Image 1 (tube, helix red, strand yellow):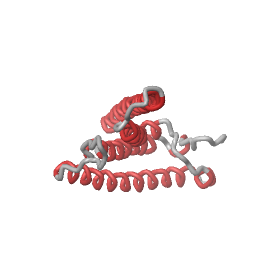
Image 2 (cartoon, one colour; image 1 turned 135 degrees about the horizontal axis):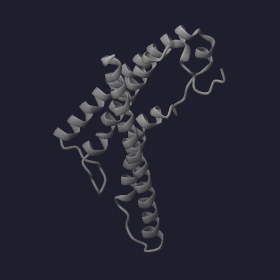
Image 3 (cartoon, helix red, strand yellow; image 1 turned 180 degrees about the vertical axis):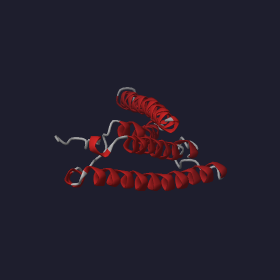
Image 4 (cartoon, helix red, strand yellow; image 1 turned 135 degrees about the vertical axis):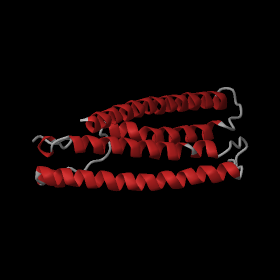
Length: 177
């Protein structure tokens, strides 16, 4: 019983983190839109230079995409193939879900490791962007291990949810039966 309570607590905590990071990602998109509007105003109405705007928008949208991954997973918004699971018996469906989650978590753990290594290398070698603005690259790179790591955490939470749910009660998103 204590293990189930601990798993439920973990699931609840990860869902709150995913929601918070999803809000942060949405705010990054909003900031990117504001910067784009300001860039257009400066360029076309004031005839001024906008040397940092484009790069900042690219980094913000990339960061929002990576940091938004766990929130989209929490909402079950990622692409899902439903035909095969719908054809399986409930125990086989649950096993397929468990295997799918484990493989996805493994892939994301590998991506988190290598992207964290990229952040470390770019930080220790002092890499900067090759533009006039020249921000340190470890800052935008940092969103990769954070996004992938939180996505893996959300998948782990979803795995625990599947493990706690009886096979007969597992619902395939979008199915009618």
